[in-house]
Image (cartoon, rainbow, N blue to C red; front, side, top):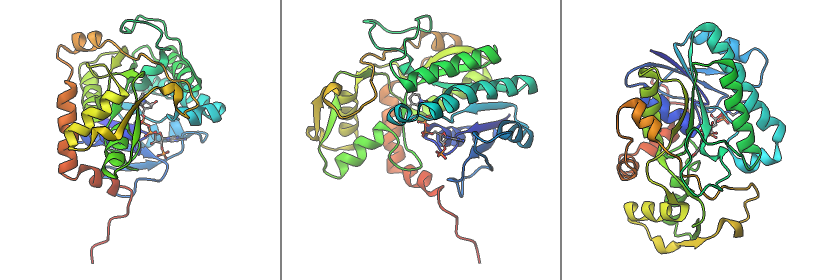
Length: 310
Ligand SMILES: NC(=O)c1ccc[n+]([C@@H]2O[C@H](COP(=O)([O-])OP(=O)(O)OC[C@H]3O[C@@H](n4cnc5c(N)ncnc54)[C@H](OP(=O)(O)O)[C@@H]3O)[C@@H](O)[C@H]2O)c1
């Protein structure tokens, strides 16, 4: 299949492109960061008029996975208008353009559409209650996509992995900080379901292969606190877990409100795919193997021009 990925320089976008390359023809959309990616890249800013029609016309994809977003919670609080356009309006426009052209569309949403007040796990049936600008605009994006293309997949995710800039994910934060001997805080009162981004990518491709559509939770099967996640990473990488201070998110300097409970059910996903969702430990093993095999450096290298052969 011909797959077009918007946000190809992002944490999900780049890892998804690399996973998809194994079986598909991949093309990325990027604003200029990718210099030597192993797949063709269309330079476009989705905020520009006609960008959506232009990328679809040039790429002629079968599938489009939208990984572009304003995904930093603090930046969204500071720039609510930009957050609304990127997280809510553009996804709706992409979905509409894809439906018109018969392109299968996948939109990436977030676990944080929930305010975390529920004592139990959240299913796809639970009414969302976004606690801030990021989550509200992401929810509006889900609704815009649903309203434009009933056959679209909407995936609520949470992932960690190796990124282009080397510090986008929580996994990288713990590895980088602990390796540098720094002491960091780990929130004991934010529960989430982390998944290795490569597992997320493989699941999204499987969902397209299986022709699923609608809303899905695509997160890890094991819930843990951010502190516990840091400890697991430290143990796997042979780093000092004692450098992680168990703290409350309420005492942090972060301004955007975080939900305390983001335990999401993956029952619908595993049932409809007819398979088990990868274990947290398997993902963490792969995260460490990638590190040993130079995967982080490989990804970071896609920002640089390749030397020309003489
Ligand atoms: N990381 C997580 O754990 C997590 C959790 C829940 C949901 N999500 C969702 O997963 C998706 C991917 O997140 P991520 O962590 O991969 O985010 P990311 O690393 O911040 O990547 C965002 C991507 O969007 C691109 N982008 C931003 N503005 C654009 C514009 N005007 N035109 C074209 N591209 C633009 C960025 O390009 P530049 O590189 O040029 O800025 C980048 O490639 C998002 O929808 C996010 O909400 C992520």
